[in-house]
Length: 244
Length: 125
Figure (cartoon, each protein chain N blue to C red):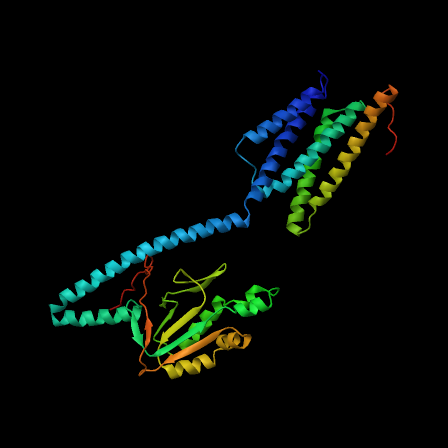
């Protein structure tokens, strides 16, 4: 056996082993492309939405039970009746009851005609982004809106308006254009708010199909706002103990 | 056929490397490719030395270790500085690999064509 055989063989084994390892690592990197991840995310969202629907159905039946219990025990003492009124008011404030009243319905849609006329432009310039919805909802709130919903999703204290990829989520539910923002409150205040809303004005000037309709107190039809159907996360809540 | 033993070693390494399920973490991939290049450079340099009959196992080993360690250090420093310093190592190893292959080819050609002594100095490329 010549003296070079062992070291050269060892080096060859080393090269073979680590080349295969490098190839493996590289192919693993290539396999994880964004398309795969998107598909995984889409299936995840679909599954979660089905789960949300099931949970909402359960919540609805439980709330009906609660209402039954409330109305059944309405024959009780005076104190209990006061508490029930209080509970009912709290449910209204929490957004658990559908409401009707005077107000405004704002309609916002993607600028499809603009995109068709300029197909080479960035498509992002012709769609409604979540920040527009958020700003307009804030404008309505500044005009003392008492109840707001977007495309049937009630906006409550914990509602989010956020952007995930190319969809807008409100109460973790996907929304698609056209967006209808309904609000109950003083129509005159709403009109003033929407006329001074930067987001609404930006969309209108850019040519987006946006419009609003006011519903006065005396109108034949009023604005209807649906109830919130989701759940309330309370896992980490603790009530602060009163002193004294 | 003593030449077959290193080739069998290479095959064994390839088989072992593709069979085991464990793989090197992604962060080390850059260092891994440099290590492979350094080893390839060392082996070809070793083969050239065998043909020139100046082979020394210790020189081969220390050459490989210093090259690999210094290249890994360059890659690490490059990562920290945001400069692809490891490209310098890849570049140098690449050039040396080609030079070694050329020298080895010259040796074989000299042997086959001229049936001359292996000691003959190869012409410059």
